[in-house]
Structures are given as C-alpha cells and as structure tokens.
Amino acid sequence: MSRRAALCLVSLAFAACHRTTGPDENYQRAAALYQQLYATQLDDAYGDPRMDEVVALLRKVDGRSVDAGAAKTMLGAIEHGREALAKERAEREKLSSAATAPAARVSIDPQAVLAANAEDAGTPTEQDPYGPGASIAELNTQTGGCLVDNEPFNEQVTGKTGTVYRLAPSEACRNKLPGMAGQAVLVSEGKIYRRIPDPRPPEPPRPAAAPDAGAPAAAARPRAAPPAQSQDAGEPEYRIVIPGAPQPGATPPPAEGQPQ
Image 1 (spheres, rainbow, N blue to C red):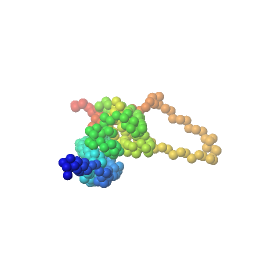
Image 2 (image 1 turned 90 degrees about the vertical axis):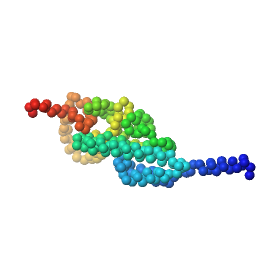
Image 3 (image 1 turned 60 degrees about the horizontal axis):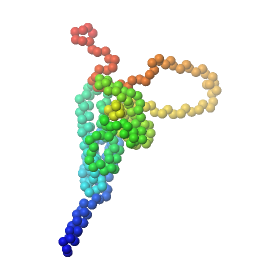
Image 4 (image 1 turned 120 degrees about the horizontal axis):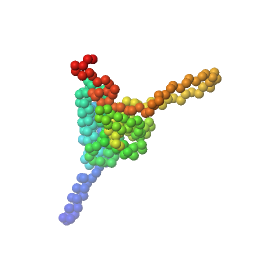
C-alpha cells in the first residue's frame, strides 16, 4: 500500500469517529421530565429531587449527538433556576415576619429553553428572555402580541412607574407563555421590571343570560335608577407595596416623648 493511500484511510477513519449522530434517547427522556416538573410546579420544580434525574440524563448525552448542544443549554438553565430559587427562598425567610406581598419570582419558561435547544444555541444565555430587562416589544413580536397592556402602576418607596401587562386570554397564548399565566408583568421604559402573582386577576367571562320567553309582567316593573357615579371616576392608580415599607395613607407613629 502506498503512503498516499494509507493517509487517505487514516483521514476517512478520523472523519468517521467524529461524525454527528442522531437524536439521543437520554436527552429525549430528560426534556420530557423537565417539562412535566415545570408544568406542575413552575419555579419550585428546580428544588424537586427529580430534577437531579434530569441532570443525570443530560450528562449522559453523547457529545456527538445532534442533541449535545441542547443538553448543554438545558443544564445551564437548570443551574440558573436553582440559584434563583435558592436566593428567593432565602429572601422569603428573611422577610417572612414583615412580608405583606409575595416576593418577585425569577421565572424560566420551559418553552424558551426548548426553543433555544431547537436552534442548538450551545451555551446557556446570561439573560433570562422572560425575566427583568427583557424587551416587551420583542416578546410580543415573538408571540404575536400575547402580552396586553393594562393599568399603570406606581411602586411605593422606590417611585418606579410603568404599565402592568397581562397574558392575553387565549389558549394559544397560554401555550406559548405558560409561566406567565396568572401573573402581572410590570413594565417600565419598555422592559420587564418584575413579575408578581397578579393581585387583580381578570374576572372570568360571565355566562350568557337565558332569554325570558314569558312573564310579560316583568317588563312592566319599574327599572331601578342607576347608582350615582362619583365625579372623580378616573382610572384607579395601581400601587405596589414593598414589604416592611410604610403603607400609603398610614398615620406615622408619635415621636418619643409625645402624648399618644
């Protein structure tokens, strides 16, 4: 065998060893379990012992598989989610005695992680695409306008102002952004400031009233006068109360030495 032929055989063997393989079963199982845990527990899923099984399966993914980059991305998302959950729980314990409102949550939407996996991003992103700092315009462009602006908000103490956004009441939007269902998204200067459980959830749709085919006497009943409206019936101001801060309108405690 000539030297040139030998080099060709070595090159072919090297290429065969580094050829990309198909989907990895370990990743498929890990992705399914990840979605199941997050759909039932949201951010608390990162503290579930079964998330360790997801991590173990992802670490078994063949580095030559087409799912290798996706597995790496999901491992980074899990690590970030666990750090955020540990920080949140520490803040809850610290403020439990004086808390008057739920603490803000750092959410990682599984749909965003899987979308990044489909594009084979390769490395976890530093910025949560659905967390503080995310552009509301970009989110609405990606989802087809699933986040709808509502009333303004004014956060006490910090003076932060902006607009409250909520998930549009459609099945398609709930499927695209399941982590934002039941949340109030506080947006300031076009970017997400924080996300909290919605203190003013929208009322469920009222069932249509059945037509009254009879009782003609009911039509003869005099209608009650509508209730008088206040002269100042403008839109109520949305206020966010910070745990431990003075409440709006509360009487300050008397100075030391002053009569009660």
